[in-house]
Length: 60
Image (cartoon, rainbow, N blue to C red; front, side, top):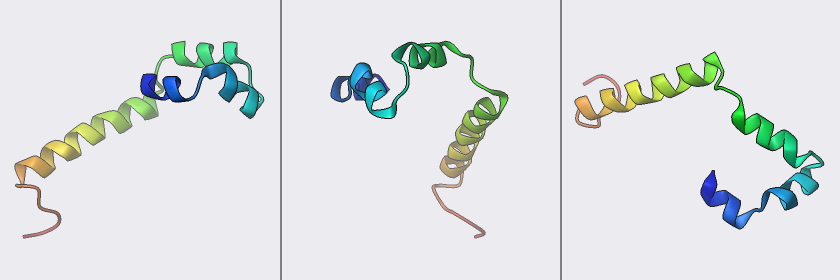
């Protein structure tokens, strides 16, 4: 996200989306939801399985 901030300043984007920049910064400080944490865990697990199977997909 930090790379995007250089190309798209928060003030400009918040004006375009009609939201407050303070609301954006408050959102950044919120902890990840249970769903988001589970998604991240699954992504790591799936990538590890893909590497373990020599990057194959499906039944062999």
